Length: 157
Image (tube, rainbow, N blue to C red; front, side, top):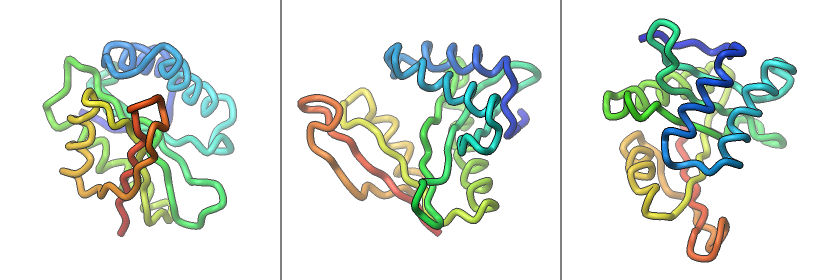
């Protein structure tokens, strides 16, 4: 397995497939995920979207998308982390997260924020974050919809 930071045009299709097949993201969210790859390809680093891809040969297995939080000095948001369902439970997500954290640290970042849903569907996601050292730091009630809170996780060094 190899890791790379620079997106290529074929990644738009790979990201669309991963997000659709994951079963976690609705159509609008899938479109947003693909649009961030497109924006990075069109604007480069000025887009403030950065990526980490895990792949075997030409097959993208998973990816992250992250960026600095405007108006902060050392804080980053992890916008997306997703692994193709055919390759889940093999440690790829954890390796992607480690690669992403290292890339953020190289860029001067000291804190990473991740938001996710309180729905039971996302329990494995929340467990993944806590296993990797993220702490639940905030909760916004009914943020996404009635009964669906926004949970904010953070990790710093």
